[in-house]
Length: 241
Image (tube, rainbow, N blue to C red; front, side, top):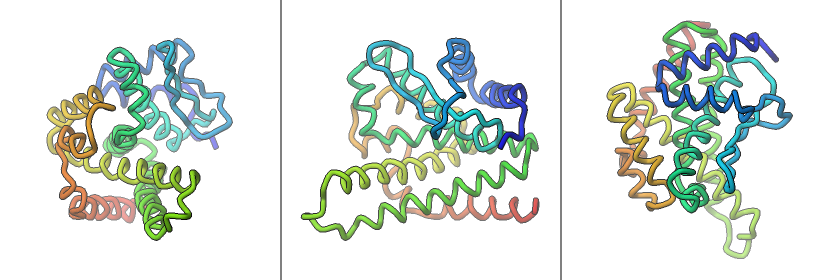
């Protein structure tokens, strides 16, 4: 359902990106002008890398609301990653799928929520969407855990794909959340770490990637940060309602 006008939708996204990083704003504007952010899709929002050109693109449903602002911010993270790797190495672009590639995109969602809350933009819808974000963390890890007792004989391609998919999304959303917490404390250094991560995708193992992002396995296993964020979110949610 559309709650925003098309003009308002793009104005909010552009203002958010401009407040975060001019590089992302220029990337967004250039892709819109080239028709590479296409809001005529009838499927969930998706970013598509291209390997024989630099026509990396995003397709989204034509819905002008806070949920789709979250989607476009998320997919812009993937688009930015694709553009960065395109000029570095096609092999890295191809191998990026083995990285924590969902971390940056989920981080961008959190940055959008923070911008919307700070500027009191459709606060009720924003808090609902943020609530759905935290629910996804539980859902992703719940599904990942469901695979822990799979017998070796059952490990067909569908099961392996499911494990890979939920591993990617569960740890991606968790890392993205922790990155945003670090960003609130130290935006300059966090953005530097994210840039280094984008440059080195496809080259490092998982442990090295965490180190580039300024994180560790121990940090991810510590639930204090997540608990603090959930408490803050719940307080805001109750206050609004």
